Image 1 (cartoon, rainbow, N blue to C red):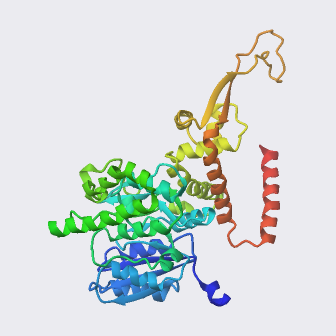
Image 2 (cartoon, rainbow, N blue to C red; image 1 turned 90 degrees about the vertical axis):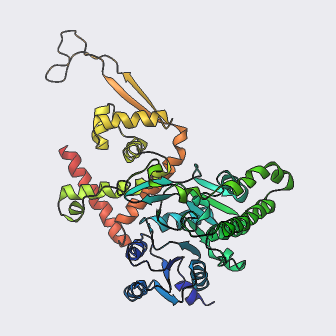
Image 3 (cartoon, rainbow, N blue to C red; image 1 turned 60 degrees about the vertical axis):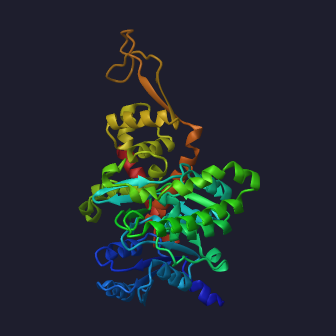
Length: 462
């Protein structure tokens, strides 16, 4: 392969099978084309749609050179994905369904994890959408790198969970799929994703769990319950999937470990794809769709003025802190307060700290309490040494009276906060990089000098 061709190769191939998805297709494609990460190709496979979806795909191909459209006779989602995999050129593969959509930072976060840890598979949390409600869904509680054995142990706990079974919350290394000839099994119409994943896991070595939800899965049709599948076919299909599942554990575990966990493995036979079976009235932890996103005033983002500049800067930093909050089960306010504290502010009272963090005293107290209960910080309020009462000129008034001792706030970042501090550093770097996008090195140097002059002017007045 020539260096010129290699240079044109996208880092990621995003695959979307399309069948009669006119109502939701634009939302899906727009979310992909609006990604912060831009080095990708989008392969839309029109699987014989009859509702005009094919024309929508073609319109996107004309508008954006990253889009590739393929039209084929209807033969099912597995064939559509297999065709796209054969055409893909990216180092990594990412999948999406036309009913769903992804967050703007989805591909960036997954590729970063894959690059930083040399991963073969990145698996992420996701949002499950039922009507106008949304819920954060995941399974692996710790964010980090895993071996195949450790990943398999997690999967053993919830073998039929969508988290493990589907394609769309994962990033795959294309070379593994190509080298081992992996494909979707078009003979079945249920659990073909899971069977593909089980085969892929055999050849993958390094796994990474990203606790940030980056995908919106719309719970409509498609689960085993909603399909018109005969009982005989259902049992036969599930038995086939179990054979794949059982074979994987025999492959990756030694005989003694397999025997020890055999009953756990066999749980799959009595476990169903529970995520697809949860009705709206059993939708725990859900909230109104849209409340999970960062609140931004569009008019303020577009407007001119000093206040708007300050607002934009704060919102951009909050945007980059949002993944940190999600992966660590913290609110954005708690994350923001912890971020401010991590920068070692010189604030000796809660009032001063609340002012610096731009939160109310009540919000600050609540955040400090939560952070302390998580052992992320240690809070102490100590009384400063007593001082003689001062007169108008700031000196002792000579009365001999002593001022009431002042309570001084002392906050210490705890060792348990170590990984979060790394995330903060990355978030801050992302924020700066976004603001300086398109700047030359000379312009960056000039900006640094100008910012120093601005700071000095403000310091002189305040």
